[in-house]
Image 1 (cartoon, rainbow, N blue to C red):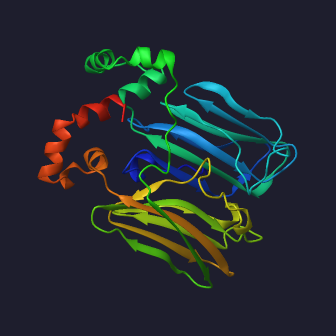
Image 2: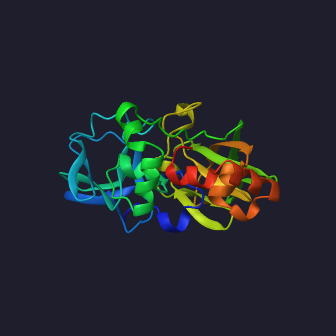
Amino acid sequence: MGTEIDVKRVVRYPPEIFVSALPVDLVTGENRVADYVAFTPYIVSLYGVSFARHDGLSFSVSVDGVTDVVKMEDLGAVKGLNYEEEVKVPSTQSMTMSITSPVNVSAYQFRYKIKVDTPNVLLKMMLGLSLRNRERELAEKYGLTEKLAYQTPVPYDPYSGVETIHTFTKTMTSSGTILRIPVPRNKKVVLLDIAAYRPASPAQAYITVERDDVPGVIRVDPYCLQGLEESIGLYPKYPIRIVALDRLLIELDRISGTHKIRVVYGVGKLTVLEKLRWVPDRLTEEERILAEKLNLQELLEVGVL
């Protein structure tokens, strides 16, 4: 079984960053551990990957029909499961992750993150994608070819719009709610990180995240998460970013054992730009007038905001 996240089902407020943390049973030879296809209109980027150290295993990623875009020849030389290997590779059509093993390996610990974007004109030009007539007109109007020639666009900040950051911890000996947050009016809650005391074996528990009307956004096994003693830390390179506008619900499905869990989340104002991008029906009349005055819809379409 693969470890894919159901992109088209779970994405609501892009850009968003999701984590997959499930063990995989490896057989001798090549094992496809994640296979992303048919995710149009989104752009899916591998955004960090973690492995348990194991000599003799190798990892590769094929993107849009090109093999070995990422290649790690020996997973015995990686940082380890408490850390992340720096990877940022976008895909527009397909992305396949494979682990090749010389022997069978049961419940191999593997974790990765994907960033999901909705393409705008600037992003499509950066990736060399074809533009529609209107997009070509907008590119010319805003001088995007010249902009890309003399500067590199600033990378997206996953903490964008986060005003306060909160850490929540809990020890659980039975299934139940880890954290439930009703989102205040005109605010957003952003899940940034989940860590756990890592059990000695897999399938002792699963952590699930639900936000707004989307159940099962992610489902992770603590056996594959970073440990409590190895927090990714404040402003990590590769945080999670799962946005909730109505409610955030994190639950534990316990099979056995005691489980210690840490959750980091942020809270911020739901801005006019975010309403326009995600929930235009929530704009007030004053906000609609402001958006039209500043031409915000077109700027979002171009990608210069």
